[in-house]
Image (cartoon, one colour):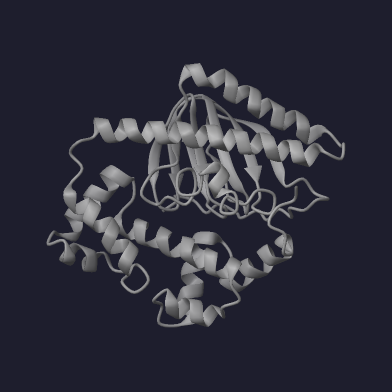
Length: 295
């Protein structure tokens, strides 16, 4: 859980207001936080410290990139002076689900509850990524007709590069870590099959014949999240999808997600997202207006 509340910022992505933003941030003696309705990519150029989200903690260091889902609050706690680049984009501009077959970042850079979003950037790849990033920044400044199309293309290339690097990082981690307990693989299957009706860590611990304490220690070590954190993130991702892509009444979604009534579901959702399910749906539908992407 985040140490401090992070204020949610709602940005109105449209053709008239830039749906992709780039900035440089520096922080040393104070935390740097963000909570936005945009996807966020943070590239740490210098510094080190602790990264914290609502559900996990991890170390960060120079030449690492972190990817965050829409409405995911995060906070950087620096131990050294830190400088980073921030890239924000809305799904109305680039939908990671619509373009998954071209980019493949859904479930790797974003929406993967069983892996951290950390990407280690090898020195040999740094210059090329920096050039693509610079091209995005330059095109954002342009006011010509085709500017959005070029920004879209550069963003797609950037995400493809990050997806490939993340896949390589993942293979290296799998090779290096050979002592992952077999029961964690069983846990993933159990969560995927039962998360909508079983919200208690004890259910999964009992199924695996281990204690809740042992299970939570293992998930924290290998996934940087407690068992409850994994379950909550899975519920949030599914709930967001239902609210965005269907007309299903919120009461029915709450029931499908295993909540005894709409009030408890709304309180759970707002705690993690910053908006009630009703407000979340209204805000996103106003922004999207039926368009999958701007280009």
